[in-house]
Amino acid sequence: MNVKVEKPHPLCGAIVTGIDLSQVPNEETVNTVEDLMAEHAVLCIRGSRATDEQHIAFSRAFGPLELPPDMKIKSGFKPRIGYGLYDASNLDIEGNIVIKDSPRHKYSKGNELFHADSTFNSLPTKWSLLLAHVVPPEGGDTQFIDTREVYDALPEEMKQKIDGLVAEHNIWHSRARGGFTTVTDEMKKAMPPARHPVVRESANGRKAIYLGAHAANIVGMDPEEGLALIDEINAFATQPHFIYAHKWQDGDLVIWDNRCTLHRATAFEDQKYKRDMRRTTINEYGPEIASTSLSS
Ligand code: OGA
Ligand code: MN
Image 1 (cartoon, rainbow, N blue to C red):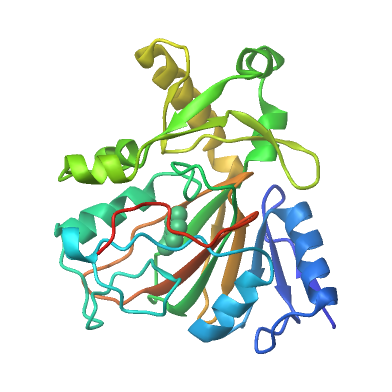
Image 2: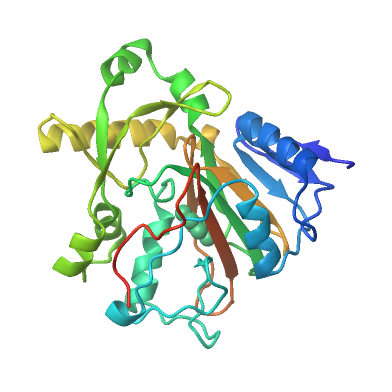
Protein backbone atom coordinates (compact mmCIF):
# COMPACT_ATOMS: atom_id res chain seq x y z
CA MET A 1 0.00 0.00 0.00
CA ASN A 2 1.32 3.40 -0.95
CA VAL A 3 -0.82 5.82 1.02
CA LYS A 4 -0.20 9.55 0.64
CA VAL A 5 -1.72 11.98 3.14
CA GLU A 6 -2.27 15.68 2.58
CA LYS A 7 -3.71 18.20 5.08
CA PRO A 8 -6.17 20.53 3.36
CA HIS A 9 -6.79 22.61 6.52
CA PRO A 10 -4.70 23.11 9.70
CA LEU A 11 -7.51 22.14 12.10
CA CYS A 12 -9.56 19.55 10.24
CA GLY A 13 -9.33 16.61 7.91
CA ALA A 14 -6.94 14.82 5.54
CA ILE A 15 -7.02 13.79 1.90
CA VAL A 16 -5.51 10.42 1.03
CA THR A 17 -4.69 8.49 -2.10
CA GLY A 18 -3.62 4.86 -2.42
CA ILE A 19 -6.54 3.14 -0.71
CA ASP A 20 -8.23 0.70 -3.05
CA LEU A 21 -11.98 0.22 -2.66
CA SER A 22 -12.32 -2.42 -5.35
CA GLN A 23 -11.36 -5.12 -2.80
CA VAL A 24 -12.85 -5.77 0.62
CA PRO A 25 -10.19 -4.21 2.86
CA ASN A 26 -7.66 -6.53 4.52
CA GLU A 27 -6.40 -6.11 8.07
CA GLU A 28 -3.61 -3.74 7.05
CA THR A 29 -6.05 -1.43 5.24
CA VAL A 30 -8.53 -1.53 8.12
CA ASN A 31 -5.81 -0.61 10.62
CA THR A 32 -4.46 2.15 8.38
CA VAL A 33 -7.89 3.73 7.95
CA GLU A 34 -8.74 3.38 11.66
CA ASP A 35 -5.45 5.11 12.57
CA LEU A 36 -5.95 7.90 10.02
CA MET A 37 -9.52 8.44 11.27
CA ALA A 38 -8.44 8.54 14.92
CA GLU A 39 -5.93 11.24 14.04
CA HIS A 40 -7.80 13.34 11.44
CA ALA A 41 -11.53 12.55 12.09
CA VAL A 42 -12.40 13.51 8.48
CA LEU A 43 -10.76 11.55 5.69
CA CYS A 44 -11.23 11.95 1.95
CA ILE A 45 -10.24 8.91 -0.10
CA ARG A 46 -9.67 10.56 -3.44
CA GLY A 47 -10.72 8.77 -6.61
CA SER A 48 -12.35 5.80 -4.89
CA ARG A 49 -15.06 5.54 -7.55
CA ALA A 50 -16.68 2.68 -5.66
CA THR A 51 -19.93 1.03 -6.73
CA ASP A 52 -22.82 0.79 -4.23
CA GLU A 53 -21.73 -2.78 -3.43
CA GLN A 54 -18.06 -1.83 -2.89
CA HIS A 55 -19.13 1.16 -0.78
CA ILE A 56 -21.21 -1.09 1.47
CA ALA A 57 -18.55 -3.82 1.71
CA PHE A 58 -15.87 -1.25 2.59
CA SER A 59 -18.13 0.35 5.25
CA ARG A 60 -18.99 -2.99 6.85
CA ALA A 61 -15.29 -3.71 7.41
CA PHE A 62 -15.37 -0.96 10.06
CA GLY A 63 -18.72 -1.60 11.72
CA PRO A 64 -22.31 -2.71 11.14
CA LEU A 65 -24.52 -0.48 9.01
CA GLU A 66 -27.10 1.79 10.53
CA LEU A 67 -29.90 1.18 8.06
CA PRO A 68 -31.70 4.25 6.71
CA PRO A 69 -35.29 4.79 7.79
CA ASP A 70 -37.76 3.45 5.28
CA MET A 71 -40.21 6.33 4.96
CA LYS A 72 -41.52 5.56 1.51
CA ILE A 73 -45.14 4.93 2.42
CA LYS A 74 -45.57 7.71 4.93
CA SER A 75 -44.05 10.65 3.10
CA GLY A 76 -43.36 9.78 -0.51
CA PHE A 77 -39.70 8.81 -0.04
CA LYS A 78 -38.59 5.93 -2.23
CA PRO A 79 -35.15 4.39 -2.51
CA ARG A 80 -33.31 5.12 -5.78
CA ILE A 81 -30.12 3.34 -4.71
CA GLY A 82 -28.82 0.17 -3.08
CA TYR A 83 -30.11 -1.31 0.16
CA GLY A 84 -28.32 0.15 3.18
CA LEU A 85 -27.43 3.47 1.52
CA TYR A 86 -28.83 6.85 2.51
CA ASP A 87 -29.75 8.97 -0.49
CA ALA A 88 -28.15 12.39 0.09
CA SER A 89 -28.76 13.51 -3.51
CA ASN A 90 -31.17 16.07 -4.93
CA LEU A 91 -32.75 13.34 -7.08
CA ASP A 92 -36.03 11.46 -6.94
CA ILE A 93 -36.52 7.76 -7.63
CA GLU A 94 -36.40 8.28 -11.39
CA GLY A 95 -33.21 10.32 -11.11
CA ASN A 96 -34.95 13.65 -11.76
CA ILE A 97 -34.16 16.77 -9.77
CA VAL A 98 -36.32 17.17 -6.65
CA ILE A 99 -38.55 20.23 -7.00
CA LYS A 100 -37.84 23.24 -4.80
CA ASP A 101 -40.03 23.50 -1.68
CA SER A 102 -41.39 19.94 -2.01
CA PRO A 103 -41.35 18.05 1.36
CA ARG A 104 -38.19 16.15 0.37
CA HIS A 105 -36.46 19.40 -0.64
CA LYS A 106 -37.38 21.01 2.67
CA TYR A 107 -36.27 17.93 4.60
CA SER A 108 -32.84 18.10 2.95
CA LYS A 109 -32.47 21.76 3.85
CA GLY A 110 -31.98 20.62 7.45
CA ASN A 111 -28.58 19.25 6.31
CA GLU A 112 -27.39 22.83 5.84
CA LEU A 113 -27.25 23.25 9.62
CA PHE A 114 -24.06 21.95 11.26
CA HIS A 115 -24.82 18.52 12.69
CA ALA A 116 -23.44 15.06 13.32
CA ASP A 117 -25.44 12.23 11.78
CA SER A 118 -27.93 10.25 13.82
CA THR A 119 -27.22 11.87 17.18
CA PHE A 120 -31.00 11.72 17.63
CA ASN A 121 -30.95 7.97 17.93
CA SER A 122 -29.60 5.80 20.67
CA LEU A 123 -27.57 3.48 18.42
CA PRO A 124 -23.81 3.63 19.12
CA THR A 125 -22.85 5.78 16.13
CA LYS A 126 -19.39 5.63 14.59
CA TRP A 127 -18.75 7.01 11.10
CA SER A 128 -20.53 8.20 7.98
CA LEU A 129 -19.04 7.46 4.55
CA LEU A 130 -20.35 9.73 1.79
CA LEU A 131 -19.50 8.95 -1.81
CA ALA A 132 -19.78 11.46 -4.65
CA HIS A 133 -21.19 9.90 -7.82
CA VAL A 134 -22.05 13.18 -9.56
CA VAL A 135 -21.03 16.63 -8.32
CA PRO A 136 -22.27 20.01 -9.57
CA PRO A 137 -19.75 22.22 -11.41
CA GLU A 138 -19.81 24.74 -8.56
CA GLY A 139 -21.10 24.98 -5.00
CA GLY A 140 -22.29 22.03 -2.91
CA ASP A 141 -19.14 21.83 -0.76
CA THR A 142 -19.55 19.94 2.48
CA GLN A 143 -18.12 21.80 5.47
CA PHE A 144 -16.50 20.00 8.40
CA ILE A 145 -15.40 20.90 11.93
CA ASP A 146 -13.25 18.81 14.28
CA THR A 147 -14.96 19.30 17.65
CA ARG A 148 -11.84 18.20 19.55
CA GLU A 149 -10.26 21.44 18.36
CA VAL A 150 -13.44 23.20 19.49
CA TYR A 151 -13.28 21.61 22.94
CA ASP A 152 -9.60 22.54 23.35
CA ALA A 153 -10.34 26.16 22.40
CA LEU A 154 -13.25 26.62 24.85
CA PRO A 155 -12.65 28.90 27.82
CA GLU A 156 -11.81 26.91 30.98
CA GLU A 157 -14.96 28.24 32.64
CA MET A 158 -17.16 26.79 29.87
CA LYS A 159 -15.33 23.44 30.02
CA GLN A 160 -16.22 23.24 33.69
CA LYS A 161 -19.81 24.34 33.12
CA ILE A 162 -20.52 21.59 30.58
CA ASP A 163 -18.58 18.82 32.31
CA GLY A 164 -21.05 15.99 33.01
CA LEU A 165 -24.02 17.58 31.18
CA VAL A 166 -26.30 15.42 29.03
CA ALA A 167 -28.16 16.73 25.98
CA GLU A 168 -31.33 15.49 24.37
CA HIS A 169 -31.07 15.19 20.57
CA ASN A 170 -34.23 15.36 18.48
CA ILE A 171 -34.43 15.09 14.67
CA TRP A 172 -37.61 17.18 14.60
CA HIS A 173 -35.85 20.09 16.30
CA SER A 174 -33.31 20.43 13.46
CA ARG A 175 -35.89 19.71 10.73
CA ALA A 176 -38.17 22.46 12.10
CA ARG A 177 -35.26 24.92 12.10
CA GLY A 178 -34.51 23.88 8.54
CA GLY A 179 -38.12 24.66 7.51
CA PHE A 180 -39.62 21.13 7.47
CA THR A 181 -42.80 21.40 9.50
CA THR A 182 -45.08 18.65 8.16
CA VAL A 183 -44.29 16.26 10.98
CA THR A 184 -46.97 13.82 12.08
CA ASP A 185 -47.41 12.36 15.58
CA GLU A 186 -46.52 9.01 14.08
CA MET A 187 -43.22 10.35 12.76
CA LYS A 188 -42.47 11.86 16.17
CA LYS A 189 -43.28 8.61 17.89
CA ALA A 190 -41.12 6.64 15.46
CA MET A 191 -38.10 8.88 15.98
CA PRO A 192 -38.06 9.92 19.63
CA PRO A 193 -35.17 11.92 21.13
CA ALA A 194 -32.01 10.33 22.52
CA ARG A 195 -29.67 11.40 25.30
CA HIS A 196 -25.90 11.77 25.01
CA PRO A 197 -23.13 13.46 26.99
CA VAL A 198 -22.18 16.95 25.78
CA VAL A 199 -18.49 16.08 26.05
CA ARG A 200 -17.24 12.71 24.93
CA GLU A 201 -13.92 11.01 24.40
CA SER A 202 -12.87 10.42 20.80
CA ALA A 203 -11.01 7.43 19.32
CA ASN A 204 -7.56 8.85 20.16
CA GLY A 205 -8.55 9.87 23.68
CA ARG A 206 -9.03 13.58 23.01
CA LYS A 207 -12.23 15.16 24.36
CA ALA A 208 -14.81 16.36 21.84
CA ILE A 209 -17.99 18.45 21.92
CA TYR A 210 -21.03 16.38 20.95
CA LEU A 211 -23.86 18.77 20.09
CA GLY A 212 -24.85 20.14 16.65
CA ALA A 213 -28.25 20.92 15.18
CA HIS A 214 -30.18 17.98 16.62
CA ALA A 215 -29.35 18.94 20.22
CA ALA A 216 -32.56 20.41 21.58
CA ASN A 217 -32.26 20.67 25.34
CA ILE A 218 -30.09 19.83 28.32
CA VAL A 219 -31.37 17.25 30.75
CA GLY A 220 -32.32 18.84 34.08
CA MET A 221 -32.05 22.41 32.82
CA ASP A 222 -34.81 24.88 32.05
CA PRO A 223 -35.60 24.21 28.33
CA GLU A 224 -34.91 27.77 27.17
CA GLU A 225 -31.74 28.04 29.19
CA GLY A 226 -30.55 24.65 27.91
CA LEU A 227 -31.22 25.55 24.30
CA ALA A 228 -29.46 28.91 24.78
CA LEU A 229 -26.39 27.06 26.07
CA ILE A 230 -26.50 24.64 23.12
CA ASP A 231 -26.82 27.52 20.66
CA GLU A 232 -23.91 29.34 22.34
CA ILE A 233 -21.59 26.35 22.06
CA ASN A 234 -22.74 25.55 18.51
CA ALA A 235 -22.04 29.20 17.56
CA PHE A 236 -18.55 28.96 19.10
CA ALA A 237 -17.92 25.67 17.30
CA THR A 238 -18.92 26.98 13.89
CA GLN A 239 -16.60 29.98 13.77
CA PRO A 240 -15.03 30.25 10.31
CA HIS A 241 -11.48 29.39 11.39
CA PHE A 242 -12.59 25.89 12.46
CA ILE A 243 -14.27 25.10 9.12
CA TYR A 244 -12.79 22.93 6.39
CA ALA A 245 -14.86 23.19 3.18
CA HIS A 246 -14.47 20.02 1.15
CA LYS A 247 -14.61 20.60 -2.60
CA TRP A 248 -15.90 17.37 -4.05
CA GLN A 249 -14.48 15.51 -7.01
CA ASP A 250 -16.36 12.63 -8.64
CA GLY A 251 -15.43 9.41 -6.87
CA ASP A 252 -14.38 11.00 -3.55
CA LEU A 253 -15.33 8.97 -0.51
CA VAL A 254 -15.35 11.20 2.54
CA ILE A 255 -15.47 9.50 5.91
CA TRP A 256 -16.20 11.42 9.08
CA ASP A 257 -16.32 10.38 12.70
CA ASN A 258 -19.75 11.47 13.95
CA ARG A 259 -18.51 11.33 17.56
CA CYS A 260 -16.07 14.21 17.19
CA THR A 261 -17.01 16.23 14.10
CA LEU A 262 -19.80 18.40 12.73
CA HIS A 263 -20.67 18.85 9.09
CA ARG A 264 -23.16 20.58 6.86
CA ALA A 265 -24.20 20.69 3.24
CA THR A 266 -23.91 24.02 1.44
CA ALA A 267 -26.06 25.49 -1.29
CA PHE A 268 -25.63 24.97 -5.03
CA GLU A 269 -27.94 25.49 -7.98
CA ASP A 270 -30.06 22.51 -7.03
CA GLN A 271 -32.77 23.16 -9.59
CA LYS A 272 -30.20 23.20 -12.39
CA TYR A 273 -27.53 20.63 -11.50
CA LYS A 274 -27.66 17.05 -10.29
CA ARG A 275 -25.71 16.15 -7.17
CA ASP A 276 -25.68 12.41 -6.57
CA MET A 277 -24.28 11.61 -3.14
CA ARG A 278 -24.75 8.29 -1.35
CA ARG A 279 -23.96 7.58 2.25
CA THR A 280 -23.49 4.69 4.59
CA THR A 281 -23.48 5.24 8.32
CA ILE A 282 -21.93 2.67 10.61
CA ASN A 283 -22.22 1.96 14.30
CA GLU A 284 -19.62 0.82 16.79
CA TYR A 285 -21.45 -2.48 17.20
CA GLY A 286 -24.60 -4.22 15.98
CA PRO A 287 -27.24 -5.21 15.21
CA GLU A 288 -27.80 -3.79 11.73
CA ILE A 289 -31.12 -2.05 12.20
CA ALA A 290 -32.74 1.22 11.18
CA SER A 291 -32.83 4.10 13.61
CA THR A 292 -36.62 4.17 13.39
CA SER A 293 -39.54 1.82 13.29
CA LEU A 294 -41.22 4.02 10.67
CA SER A 295 -41.38 1.51 7.87
CA SER A 296 -43.62 -0.11 5.36
C1 OGA B 1 -25.18 13.66 5.04
C2 OGA B 1 -24.95 15.10 4.85
C3 OGA B 1 -23.99 16.72 3.37
C4 OGA B 1 -23.85 16.95 1.91
O1 OGA B 1 -25.26 12.92 4.04
O2 OGA B 1 -25.25 13.26 6.21
O3 OGA B 1 -25.09 15.85 5.77
O4 OGA B 1 -23.08 17.88 1.56
N1 OGA B 1 -24.55 15.46 3.63
O5 OGA B 1 -24.48 16.24 1.14
MN1 MN C 1 -25.31 14.66 7.66
